[in-house]
Image (cartoon, rainbow, N blue to C red; front, side, top):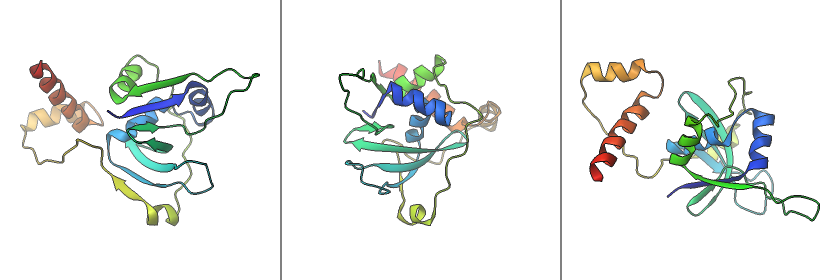
Length: 172
């Protein structure tokens, strides 16, 4: 299962400096992303720059991938005797959505735009499709589709959530 891990102090700094919560940023991995290896400098580990969307907003996330774990923050400092050990949290996508539903997403609507990606990014980037997602052509009643669309952006994601709830309820 995909896990996201970060240090809370790094998360707080990102909210302060960029006005975007790691909770929100991690949601890009629910959908297709465009990513490339981040070789701007030697970080001592393999890092990626990814562009992905949450509803209608595109986010730029720098992360490391440690087998089945995705880290939205790759900055790790060794604590010294003068510093406290950072608090590390780990969430699944389901737990992240629960945190957001509880109002813990501190992303602000006035978050500044990220840097524009240059031709180097687009020439080297690849599309990554999340595991377990399949594109299908589905015929539904017009009024059902219209109802979901009236709920706002992300109607296909909500339709999938309804189907997921049905399947989960009937598996038990």
